Image 1 (cartoon, rainbow, N blue to C red):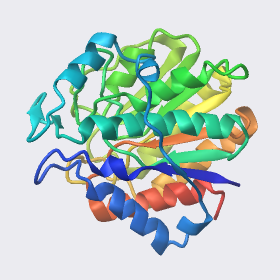
Image 2: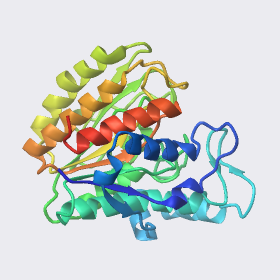
Image 3: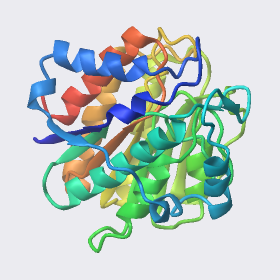
Image 4: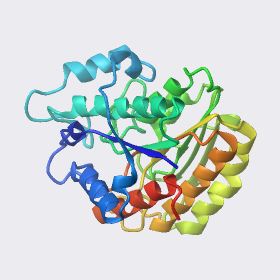
Length: 308
């Protein structure tokens, strides 16, 4: 199985400041972990292009795009909220992150790889149509899902989000689209402190209490996600791959193990092979314990590659 690894050096340029958990080193530890696991040289490597404005506008308003462009600082920090800060390199990094996802869709749809992992930052699943928040500026997975739906062979896209934080932005942007099914697990209550909207068979949101652990996660996937996915029968799967539900993460309390991320990835890959032509595009979201992030991302990528 061929897995594309899509990233760009400019994703390091986003620097929200000293001691911010969404730090540039997040990408370095993934890179190092893939080398240590002897996976890196067996990936198909791609540089992320810059996303064009018309692509960003699939998921965001022109007003929001112009707001971020107009407030991109030439030096120092522009603070959107206590957690979300723009540095001089942020906007370019965000365009690379969105561009990686678009490139990933194209790589998969053109048969150049079976699946793809976008090792990019800033993350995206909290970004709403008209608002950047929660470390996020452009909603990468929503952009990717909407772009995939523009391909002739894709009629239904499933977005799977196992980040510990509820992907409010993804749901706000995609909730009303009957061509999209969203399945999530997340710690509740936790940032962004919003109850997910109930949207029939297009959204399967499974809130988990602090301390839930591995079995509760696996039960949610098998008992809630799986039947909804089978009924929906997606042509393409986009994954919000957040690793902050790990037991060592400083921002959450779900207590998942590294093996849980291997397991859920194998589930996704096997389901996609049976129902979605094997098409899986995974995009990095959270994960703030650097050692745990590296280990979990390596387990995730190894499973995407079809390696035991």
